[in-house]
Image (cartoon, rainbow, N blue to C red; front, side, top):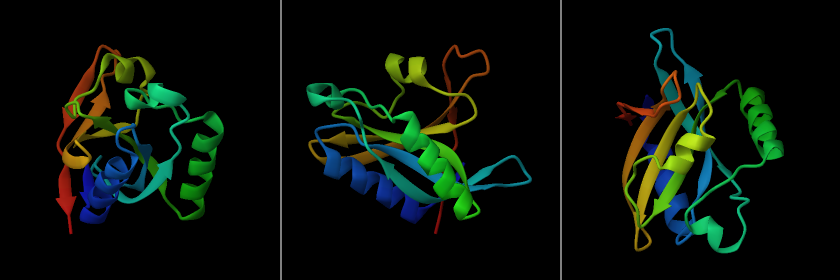
Length: 141
């Protein structure tokens, strides 16, 4: 997956602002003929988990997902990825992430340690839903 440096910065900033809770949102962009995707914009979402559950889980309501699809289409873009933060945990998919994952989308996870955004990783759900496949993340200017 290719993403602009602006996308990376916005994801990290959102994760840091939401700390100690999980942030979540969408990466919008274009499919390329080569099979790659190019993320060009972010769209923040509301983590609808309640109370302390937001520290280790995120949820995006169906209505908000639909609104994001409409917003992307109005700009001639597609939803390519769903991002979220892992407060004080590695940027690796959790068992809960696997359980809730949708096929087709990439998943970007940013580690936020003590309020500071750190590394970011990219994942794709395996066809058999047995786990995630790590994806190369190319950062463009």
